[in-house]
Length: 220
Image (cartoon, rainbow, N blue to C red; front, side, top):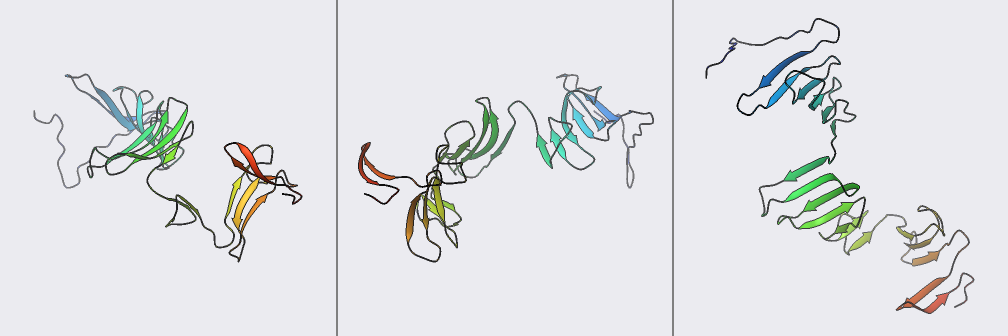
């Protein structure tokens, strides 16, 4: 089929100007075979939009670019450089390297939260982080403050790395509880049960039974 409209020249262009208040400048498209419809253009608020309705820029909006440059997919008011919005919003990355099409995915789940899933070269699920359930790391050692962790979990700090365990009885997530740390400027390792601020006992258990207790007053 030949072109219905053919514009030719050194710098060919097609200009659409909306002249009235609240007007659009847009192009409407429809296919006779499938009935698929699209419209694209600039809406009255200055947003460039693509919709799945051929005669409307205010409904069926699939893609939007604000005048600020923010891009929205599923939203006309993107609040970041790229803003995705839908019932089960998802970002999927796949690769043609490796086997089984390795997949990385960030998505909202109907289970009630977000998850981040990352596969290895065979698409084994090595990393799964859920906000609503169990998470796991199966890809290797994990380092906090260390780029080359030597154990399953390595904590490193130039001064005094601290590992803390606490609950709502001993304090908040940032205070008190049990801490394990290497003293600053020393090779000594310390176990300190700060309790709720005034200390607490340290107990060693075997199969649920207390085998050794160090009381807060120092008695064993």
